[in-house]
Structures are given as structure tokens and as C-alpha cells.
Length: 160
Length: 277
Image (tube, rainbow over all chains, first blue to last red):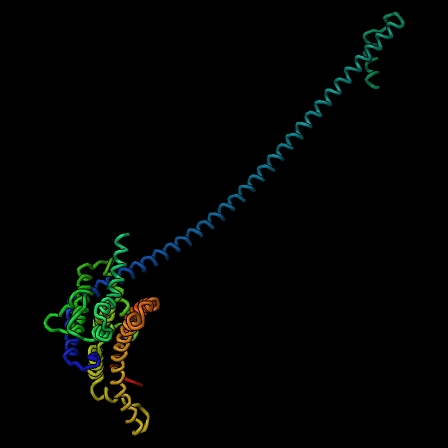
């Protein structure tokens, strides 16, 4: 079988064909292709680098955002606490004021009621004295009650 | 859909066209011999006259030229369609280059040295791959199934091993590398002899490995097909699936052998230019 036959011609032609192919490719095709591949690799590396930087910035922004949110929350809760305190103080003040006013009104009312009570009692006593005098006059059918007597009776009734 | 069926039929026709030739001639050994030998003719289509190759060139040389032509076409197509976002064949080409670069050259030689050698190993890998795979097209032949072709490539590697080794280390240090350090002289000479002959043997095995794999694969495919004619037409029930399986296996073997040859060549050349501890 001629596959095992030594054929120097074919061996030399193999070298020549391979050599020519290699030379042509090395000189004309590989530089452009390898440059293109390198450019792409650089572009990809740059894109990855940019993406990493963007990610870093994003995470920094996120951290800042989280900090700001936390700060805002703290401030909000502080404001809320202060507002609650103020509201509580105002409520207490208002309540105290209202209570004081109520007490005042109550005291005035009591004084007024007392005054009116005294006046009413006075009036009742005066009416009773008059009534007593009128009744006495009718009983004895004689007007014995002078003006001075009436005053005297009234004073007597008032002392009761 | 219709085109798809036509393509399938075409593929089946191409795959079994040697059978058709066989059926036409009825002489098993003559067809087998012609199919795997390095003749001056090609049976491009069965039932048609055999094509006489021009200028009296042999079939394997023609296949080498075809491989070189295909590689050159692929590279110049790639060069013409260069883009940052590759498409079509450029993707295939760049992946091949990337594969040789990342899986063969750079891990063994390092980036600085590897960049200089990348075009050589890329060309070698693609040359072998194309030659291996072209032989799988029915009626075509495998140039790497000829020991003269694989020996020529292995001899080229041997020459490179010597020239690179001598250039980078100097003649004395290159040959001194074969002597192990710290052993007595007789053992040193014996080991140096083994190392030196080993270098020739390793490259010879490089050649034989590629040749035997490609040759045996094709022989297996033809052997399965010929069972139909030697035994009975019913043998086709087993022979055809086995042939298809072997054929698909040969595609993988074609890739693996191109990879192994390139990888070992890269290792031998790198070892020659480095001082052994």
C-alpha cells in the first residue's frame, strides 16, 4: 500500500504548502486579526472596568442614600418626639389654664350664688316680716303696726 | 422545509457515495485501496468518470492545497470583515485563534513568548484540522492519513526544536541540557543518550499518532461499509449505523488529533528553549 511508501516529494510539498500558507497568513492576515482581537479585548476590559467603577459609584451612592435615609429618619423621629413633647406641654398648659378658668368661673359662680342666696333669704325674711305684720293686723283687725314696728319686726326676723 | 430534505438527501448521498462506487465496480479490495491510497485521481461523484488531477499531482497533495486554500480564504474573509462585533465566519475564526491562544500557546509559553508563536501554532492547528476534516467528505481524501505528510510536519517540529533551543540557549547549553545534573558520568551519558533519542522518538510518535488515528478511522468507516458487499445486503442494518457512528467519532478525532499535535509541538519547542533543572 503506497500510504507507507516513503515519498520525499510529498513531504517537501507539505513543507512548501505549509510554509507558504504560514508566511502569507503571518504577513497579511494575522496582524490585522490579532490587532482586532486585542482592540476588542481592550474595549471589553475597559467596559468591564467602567462597569466596575459605575458599580462602585452606585454602591457609594446607595450607601450615601442609606445614610441620608437613616439621618432623615433620625431627624424625623427627633422632630416627631419634640413635636409630641411640645404638643403635650401645650395640652398640659391648656388643660391647666382651662382648669384654672373653670375654678375661677366656679368660684365666681359660687360667690354670685351665695350673694343671690343671701339676697333671696333677705327678701324672704322681709316678705315673712311683712306677712307676719299683715297677718297680725288681720288677726287683731287693727292696724297697730307702725312703720317703726314693721322695721322692728323685720330686724327680729332677720335675727332668726 | 423542502431545501432541508434536499440537504439531508445530499448528505446521505455523499456519505454513501463510496458504496455506490463499490456497487458500480463490484471489486471491494480495489475500491478500498483506491479510497485510502494516494492516487492521482479523485472520485468526485459516483457513476461519473473518475477525475484526473491536473499536473499529475497526487490526491493527498491536492487535499493539502485545498486545506491551505480554505484556510487562506477563511483568514482573508475574516480580514475583510473585521469588526468589533464579529459575525458569521469571523466568529468561528476568532474562536479558533482564541482557542489556540488560551488553551495551547499562552498556558505553555507564557504571554510574551506566546504572542510571537501564536500565528505559527494557529496555522498548524487549522492546517491539521482542515486536512483531518476534509477527509471526512466522501470521495475526498485525508492528507494526514498519509505518513509522509505527518512525518514532514513532525520533522518540521523537530527542526524547530533544535533551532529554537540552540538560538535561545546556545549550542553548548542546549546539548548540555540533555545531561542530568548531579549524577555520575556513565549514568549521565546513558540518560543523555536516552533524552537525545527520546527527542527524535517523541516527534516520530507525534507523526505516527496523527497518521494512525486518521488512517484507522477511515479504514474503519470503509470496513463497516464493505460488510454490506462482503456479507450480505442485510448487513447494512448494522453496518450503516456503525458507519454513521464511526463517522461522527472521526469528526471528534479530527479535532482532538489537531489539538494534540499542536499542543505537543508547543510543549516540545518550549522545553527546548528552557534550561532543565
